[in-house]
Image 1 (cartoon, rainbow, N blue to C red):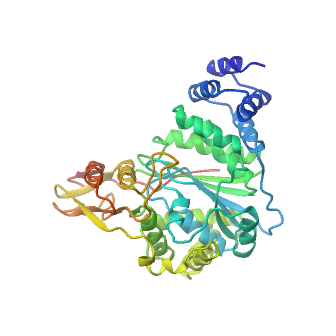
Image 2: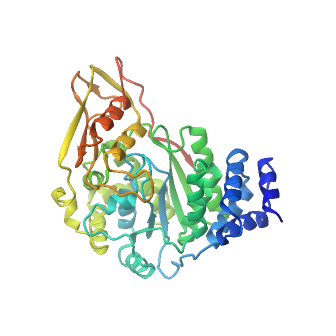
Image 3: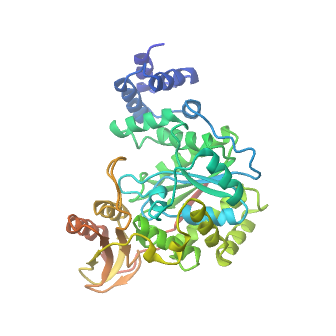
Length: 434
C-alpha cells in the first residue's frame, strides 16, 4: 500500500476502504507519513468529499489513536452538547446546568475560541480561580456528585485528531464537512457518552454559511453517532446575528447569569431551553420531548439550573458569587459607543464582523497560542428588527487597551444594515435532524 496511490484515488473521487483510511491516519500519527502527503490527502478530501463508510472509518481511527473514557460506573445516561461555533453562543453554560438539574449526567468536554467564534473554556476561565484542567478522576468524581463537569480535551483522547486538525488549519481544509464531522464525533465518542445534542450553526457568524452545508454536516454527524450506537439529535440554528446581546468572555458569563435567572434575551433563552429539553429527552428523564420542555422550563423558573451552575463553579475552584456580583469578574476600563448614522430599522447584523471586532480588541485569538483579555468585548443595544433613531447607540465596545478600538468600531459599523421598513422575521431554529 502506497500513500501516493491513496491520495490519487481520493483525488479521483474513489471510496477508500477502512484499512486504507487506517493506513493513512496511523502512518501520519506515527510519523511514517510526512506532512506534505497528509496535506495532499486532506485537500483531495476537501474537493472529493467522503462516503458515510469512509467518515465512520476515519472517526474510528481517530478514536483508536488514544484512550477512551469509561463512565459506565457513574449511574445514569451521559449526554453531552456540542455547538459548531458562533458569536455570542453561550448556550452550553445554560443548557447543561438545566439538564443536570433535571438529573441528566452531563460530561461537558469543551473547546476554546478561534477566530471570530468564542469558546466555552475561555468563558469559564474568565471566572477567577475556575479550573478546566481536571484530571480524569476529578472529572468523574464531579459527575458523580453534581451530574455536570466542564473539561478541556485531554491530550490522551484522540491525539491523531489534534495532529490532523493542526494540519487542516495550515492547509486551508478546515471547512471540509467530512473532516469537521469526524473531528467532532471522534472526541465526543471517546469521552464515554451515550447521547449527544448538536447545535449546528449556519449564517454569517458560523463556519457553515449555507443551510444546505449545515444540513449535510448535521446528517453526517448524526449518522456517525448512530453507527457508533449513540443517540444523537442535531438542531440547525441561525447565526446571522449574534446570539443574545453579549459577545466576550466575562460579559457572556454575566448574560448567562441573567438568563439562568429568567431575565436573559429571548433568543438565547429559547434556544438554551430547547437544547436542554433535548438533552433531558435523550437522557431518558422524560418519555416525551414535550415533557422534557416542561421540565427544562421548570428548572429555569425555580432557579435550580442557576444553583447548579453555582455548585459547579465552586467545585471547579471558582467563586460562585460572580453570578450575583459582576464586579468580581474581570471588568473593562474603557467603553466606546457605535451609533447609527440614520433612522430606520435594523435589517441585518453581520455576526462575523461583530465577532472579529471583539477578537480584535482582545476577546478572541487568531492562533491557538494567543492570549485573551477576559474583560473585553461587545454589548449590542439592538437586534434585527429594532427601530433606531439617527445617533442612537447600536452597540458598545468594552476595552482595556485602545490600540485597535477605532479599527474594531469600523468593523462594527459595517456589520449593521439599516432599512426604511422592518425586515421579515427569521426563525431561530431552522431544522431538526435525527
